[in-house]
Image 1 (cartoon, rainbow, N blue to C red):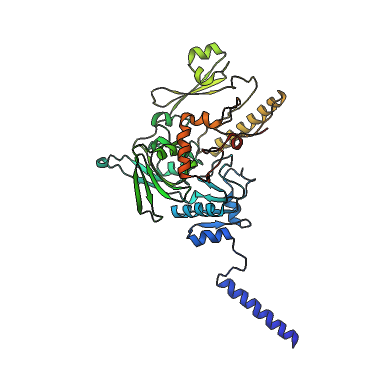
Image 2 (spheres, rainbow, N blue to C red; image 1 turned 180 degrees about the vertical axis):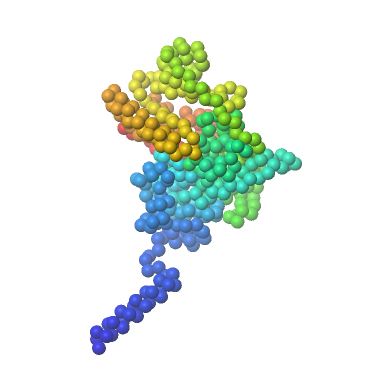
Length: 421
């Protein structure tokens, strides 16, 4: 009888467990951060360590972010979702990391123990036709999580012109908030990407939903109805977003000007020099280079008032190799060319690393702008010059607790940014 009673008890225990599972009742304690986002009304997917989605969406397409593990990965679907993520990070006093397209190979969009917002679900693209009466040109509404490959597939360069990332995997958000330079000449014809942004919709680091244009800042309710409008004849926030945008908030929409004409192809002319007299006589680059010799210069001409010049050379106060830039251009529709380019670049890297080792040098780490000054001058003074005080003032208004901090952010220091040997 006792044995039968135990069997009956076990049967009822299993039945109760199955009923709870069928009713959607979790038997595992809910993650408090995920619970907090859900209680706020977060509509997107949320993943915590140990879940398949966590590992999938933690990594970018480069796979270089293996060292950083956030507390949670959240994938917003709306501007309100982004606001909830910002507010929760502030209230819980944890760091915030944000990814737009996921192209960044330096992995500055991901931090250990952070609340990570993956914006790749915010990938909308909508064409707005010109309105001559309101003096509005042809423009796009672009989500930060889209990539330029997707944008150009829907709005091809055979039909439209725009300033865009050169690689198809470059995200719209990171590209435009960093200035937006197209190194094959579109920028020299149409300006930088940031110069073509007409309006930003953003969540500030204080959790406010804003629309920021050249002459106004609108504060919105989370349902996007207007709460308040502040007219700003000289809008410093609009200016700040064009060169240091990721320091002040998280942009959820760019109103972006494009042009109703096919994109012209640039003329690329490589010029090789044998000595300083040749290059100084041929091209006036002394203000940019200041070097004793120059290996090569690439001239790009795409209809600007004057061509662009890109030079590869060592810094003037060092005789050894300092940085190397390997670029291989190929037809994006040809996987065979892409593979050959990858092999060539990897071979060049291996050979140059060997040469550097023979000269007593070694690879420090992959690096990107803004770079450290070997003479001790802070990078932000070199990068933003006299504008830095204006940017710092905006940082105090829109991100007083320095929630949005990373290597390239206003308010970071050389210690945050510079590589160590």
